[in-house]
Image 1: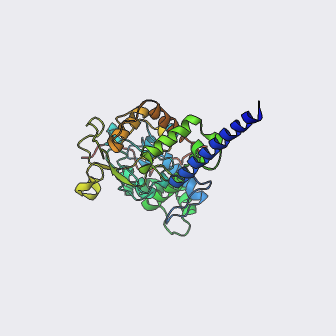
Image 2: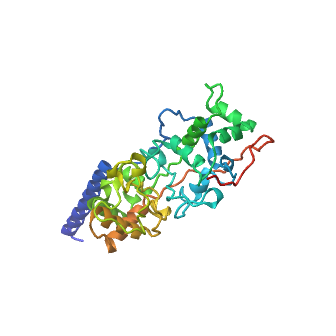
Image 3: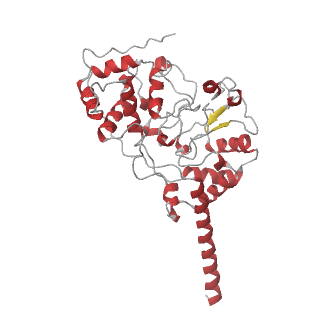
Length: 346
């Protein structure tokens, strides 16, 4: 190769390197990599003892009235932190109203649930336990169940040593929050944000460019690529009732403000490729179809063919590695443990 040929190749490589660095610089203005340590949680110091207790509670089906459903039932850590159902099945095999969001990385969401009605994971943990279509239990029955097993009483005391009577529903929720704060899934996108050029394929980098340039990152940004703000579903063009059921008005049920009708929290996109079906209704099973629907409804533009494929490739780069999860050995129930019931209350 002539000296001119070497010069041309060098110029091309230099230009490619500059373009890659520009893309990363732009991305770092919009997104953040996951931390390498467990994040702090407001008003809930995280300790190894509290994490272990929260893990036991997360997997214990006796926290439900029937003794059948645990947190892991709807937020299955083996299937992306959700249940891969349109809407969850709970107590008495009743069907819930909305798709279960993933619990993975949920500690970074600024509010929990599709309508943001819970401010943090501790508050969120209390909701399904008491929901009649989910675990159908009561705080008093949860506390009675925990107090009936000496191991749980010991674990609560170790987790909340400053309290004389630590077995409370509030502490139950805080322990689960502590465990869920450990469920972080670093992904190839994080490695790329941290400087590893080879962590993303050329197609994934192009998908990131399309994602940013088309406006997807306007709502899906930050550390969780969403999960921090609320937007009307159908900002530009309202999807059909098959995707956006008319009876579910989203955040309106929380605020009773007309402007919040059909407003939902922007879904966090980490692990989105393994958490089908999509949207609060759970009506869409194909990720490319979901991307196309969002482009039309939220951005008012067609995003299909190679561009949609590239965005899907990028979204696959958000699939992370789950920490090793060993199923906990739970305390045995005793003669004083409340008996399970499948009764459905009105």
